Length: 392
Image 1 (cartoon, rainbow, N blue to C red):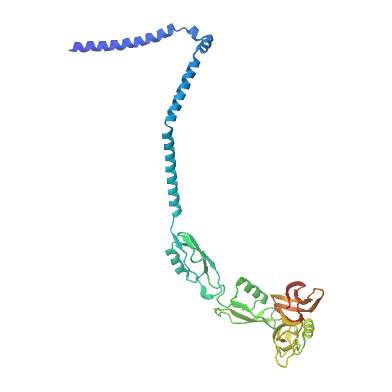
Image 2: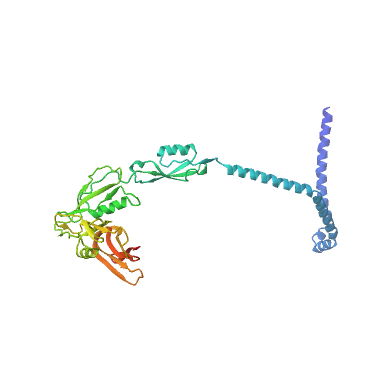
């Protein structure tokens, strides 16, 4: 048995050795028999290229290409159907995704929260899944603190849940108590109040025409005020102040205007340093149209720029071609008395006449007139036109 295995092993080894020698012999035989002179000769390769059947190979290629196209044509219907089906499927998927995205949040109606407290408004917005954008603003009513003044969009608008709604919330009044103004300059106080209440229709603190008093304090210094410091402001308040006219303020006697005509009043206005505030009323029994019927009384001379109230009689009906009235122009208070004039232009524009030129303190300017119907009245301040009206 052992001998048989030994013999088999010898035969296997002999076979492997024979194969290796055969391969080695084949390689050397190839090298030995190859005509290397011919292989390395370029003339051989040029001749081989010229004698090769290239035309046959080209025809074979065209036949293969034609067969491929025929196969593709036979399978064309199936390919087209497959491509169209894929495109339709993609279109359906895109439409589904689009409508799913557009649908988004549900739509809700914007509630009306104007006038409500901020906390209540926020709860209502939260219930509707709307997000408030808060803006703060001063208001004119002290009771408006932390209430909703305005909203955008308006109530009833339809929005998607999650959208923003702008709420304008009152932060209260800009001034809730009267401060101490004694010692301030009257012009500084006027500017301060104008700045505080800029843009408000009804300012909460209105400065009345000051009363001037001779005092050792510098001219324009506020000596007293009413209401006093600390008074709570719950509605518009008029602030009355007494202002120093200086230690040596010039005083003038108030002229008597009662019974005088408008022309006579114009002459006095041009020669005095007082400011006259004219008011009109329908003529009464015993009174004459176009004359002064009453005026503010003073027991002693007053400081310059003091305002004097004057009443004039105006007709109840038309007086022929003459129109009576009071020209009014509301301007800012002048730091010093400025030149004011009232001109009249005839109805055909051919004639211009100056009715009066005087020094005025500003604020409300009022001047009586009696001019022909159709005339144009022009108020000039410091030589520049400020207001004009056509008398009808």
